[in-house]
Length: 160
Image (tube, rainbow, N blue to C red; front, side):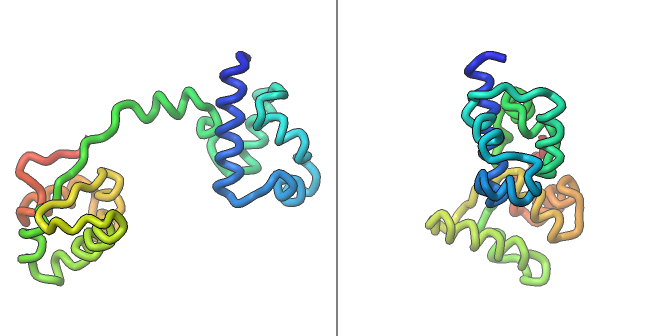
């Protein structure tokens, strides 16, 4: 394994551990000594090679797919960024609250986070649309069609 790859793998391991709110010693405690802090730390620094079997065990311990620990696999899965979706805020404000309430609240939350109050359009990610689809109890494709029908998204908008 090249040193650059070992470092990239170590960064992924550290990122997953940090996302779970664990220190190196926390990993040792939570694993009841199965994973020693010094060993996990050496994997994260790229100072020590990790076998496939150990990597699979560590992924299981963290509760993530092994692929999430592999730096190259994650980069190739991402590919080109998905196109953004442009919501017409003017049209959204004209819709009845029982229809557009969840979308209006979601859009207001994004505007607040961004400090973006131009009031005309709001760009969201396709991941945001997926979240909204859960709220509306629809598939992302069906919600896209609905929003196009309401005039909130431009005609011809499609998901990737």
